[in-house]
Length: 304
Image (tube, rainbow, N blue to C red; front, side):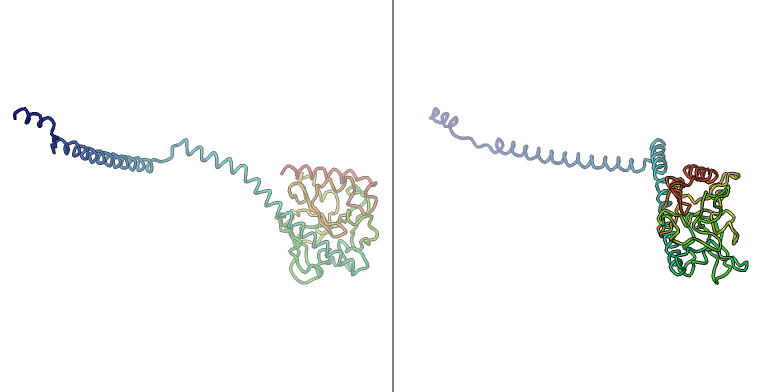
């Protein structure tokens, strides 16, 4: 019997709750402890991150960072401001060309009503001077067309015949000296009291009728220097080293006898054709003073 009981003792399965449940409980406790540790670690990390962010938010720019930002802004300004300036001046040039185009059409309408004669640079019957601006005014119905947006001067052409305000003074007729010392060297399309017929022009598309210049007198007047580009001194004043041609990015605008307007370098008006004359444009020599005035004006305009 004793042997049987001993055999059963070693062969019977033993089910000890402590042996089974203890490892399971320890495993569960370990998982809970791990989860707790993980959660606590994440919470601590979040807290540390928030503290770091808070510290970073309070930290200002360093002097080096500020200097770098200022240098970048200054560099961009230096690059972009000239571009913006050129864009504005180009817009003014386009507006000026539009004005001179309308003036050219007004001159052509006048010539259709007057047997194809161009308007005189001024009409002075009985000593009453009427500049060409007022002569063609009934065809334009606007005085503001005579103001170039780039011309900051306030000179005006006196109203001696028509009612209304004085006309701004920005555009001048191709009239005045011809073969004299300060003239271009030949006959010009417009003149006081009498002008050429369109049929007398060698080429209407290359004959200048109107040029633009600035008047530094800033006053209202109807004298001969305020309605026409009288001579080379009205292009460049060598005494005062002053350019009178209006500068649009190195160019000036001109109205031609066929009504179109164009911005050109001053030198393009005498080479290869002498566009200030009614004939002999390809063969007539440009007078020395006129050529020098054109060259000096262009050189001065290219500087700005």
